[in-house]
Structures are given as C-alpha cells and as structure tokens.
Length: 69
Length: 371
Image 1: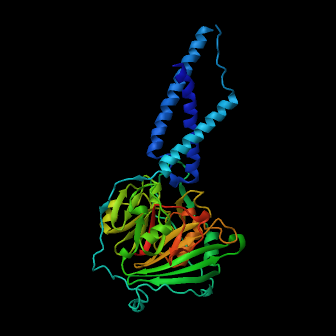
Image 2: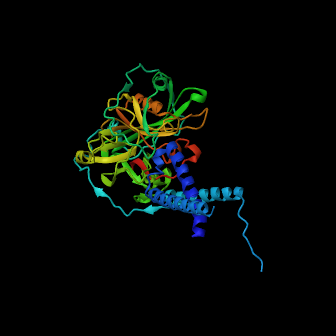
Image 3: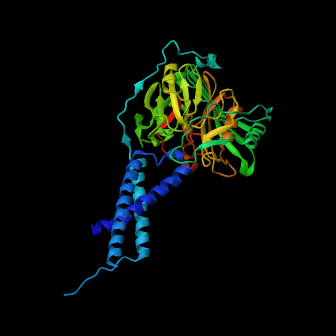
C-alpha cells in the first residue's frame, strides 16, 4: 500500500505530461490525431484510474494525519 | 542494531526523473503507434470496376502520335522558358455549401478558415514563369510536367504542374507501400513508383497515419470511417467531387461508382473553378508549406501540383489560399489538397522532380499514371 502510494503520483504525473504533449501536437497537426487514437483512449482510462486512486490515498493519509493531531 | 532510514530523493532529482520518464513514455507510444508496421490483413471489398467498354472514354490531345511509340519521354535539351502574361481577374471566391455538424479532430482548433483574398489575387494577377520539363505518354495516358514559379525573393513560390490526360478514369491509379493496406507500412514515393512501373506519381493522403478515414483505391474499399477532414472522390466516369465530412454519404458515393477516395483535404475549389471562401483546416495547416494537390479540369483531364517550400529564395511554400488560386489558375473545376510538408513529392521520368523538404519521407501511398 505504501509503495503504491509512492509510485502512483508519479504515474499520474507521467500520464498527465503525455496528454499535455498530445494536446499540443493535436493543435499543431490534427491529422496526426494523437488524442483520439485507440491506444490513447486506453491511456486516458489508465490516467483516470491512477488519478482517482492517488486522490483517494491522498485523502486517506490526510484524514489519518488530522486524526493523529 | 542501527536504525537505517532511507534518505528521500531530492525534489529536483524527482522532477527530472518524472520528466525523463514522461519523455520515454511518449517515445514508446510514438514507436508503437507511428513507427512499427502493423499489417491489417484487410484485402478490401471490390465496389467498382471499369469495364472494357469504358476504356477509351476520353481521347488524348495527341492521340494520333501515340500509335508511334508506347512511351516517349522527351527532351534532354534545355527546357523552353516562357512567361505567361497576368490573367484577367475572375470571380475567385464562393461560399461553401453545407457547413453543419463540423466536428473536430479531438481538439477545438479545427475550423473553417477564410481564404486570403490578397494571396489569391497575388497568384491570379502575378507573372508566372514556366518551363516544360518534358512529356511522356502511353496508349492510354499523356503527361506533361512544367516547373513554374511566381513572386520574388522571400515571397517566391516554385511549383510543379503535371497536366494529365487519360482515356479512362482507371488510368488514375493508386498504390500502397509494399502493396499492402495497413498501419505504418511505408515506402518512398520513388520506390513505390518504380515498383508499379509508373510514368508519373505523386504522394497520396498518407492514409496509414490515421485510424479513421475513407480509403477507396482502384475500385476497392479498404476502410469506410469518415473522419473530420474533407473527402475527394474520383468516379469511374472520370468526374471528381469533393465533400465535407457532413456531406459525405458512403452509400451514394459507392452507388455512383467511386474509383478512388482520399480523406485529407481540405477541398480547394467549389466544382466550378472558384476558390472556396473557407477551408476546413487549422491555423497551422493553413500556413505556407510544401503542398501536393489533385485537380480535375474535365473528365479525363487532371492537374497534379506539387509546391516546394520551407526554402526561402527558392520557394516559401503555399498557403491553402495560394494553392487554391494555383489550381484555379490551372483551369481546375474541383481540387483537393493532399498530404504536404515533407510528404510533398512528384515523380516523373524516373526521378523525383521537385526538391522535397528535408529530402522527403516514406509514405503509405501514391497516386500514379502508367504501369
């Protein structure tokens, strides 16, 4: 659990970085169609799942630390 | 017993690691999705044939000469250079019909961009320098290629025009890299032209770069999934028509006898030789770039244009408005922008005649004559 909570934020950052790059490339050259490709849709799903778990863990640890205080 | 606590990574090292990992992930994505060839196994469905009675539907301008030789590549001597007088101004704009339901490619940037009237008049009223590079013919096709330029200094545009006459629409052929429909299967225009024994060839729409598009080649339908770019259809009766994505009706087009269909664009002319008032494109793609385009003067008479670019003093490239004006100036009634940039290449007389940006690149498909 602890290891997961360490790795997941970085996975989220990496996936977010990828989609920012895709978004810029799509503006420059839409015919390349980075965002709407099948593999991009799968990456987007992975990004959402990773973001949700990261957020849940963040809330969990925040509440735990609040209780300790 | 010592209590070992692991020292956390410094923040700057963590940021650099994340950036490097992001770059690596994008690299792997590109490698998988844009480089590795992926055969589709799709053989296509025959939707149109040109029967023998349709062969010879149109006559070549010098049909009498064709009986003398199968292929007559001419001219090793210096090409004759002529300068055409500025042409009389004509109506060059028209409103695009049907503009409904225009979707985007996955961003909010694709839209209708207004054609640039100054750029259009600079082409239609400018002095064009023209030199014939040669002509070649077979029993069923005749191709004459010209090198033309317009403008001076940093505004100079150099382009190549192929004036093509065929006896039947089936003489306008297309070929895939390695003869196979699939993703990331690429080859050079030169190799594809040589493999298909082409007299003349030009780059196509790079269908392999997209997962969604209309792909009809030589009367065979390989993919029928219209994307958000315009579609150009060459019919078996020799006519050519362009469609916006919302106008395109696959069943109607197939019923009419679609021989070739390209999904790239945008459409440049309105079907009557007038430049469209708006183009379905993006700001970036609307800027001056190397270009290739196909145009139809009348059934059996086609114009192919390749514009060189990104080389100041030789050729700056053409905006879509300038390309549309060039196609209109060449007498086309309808015209369609094909893949451009490094892809813009024209093959004639066993060599690439233009100067592709960065030496060109490998592509998915070509349009060719002969073979």
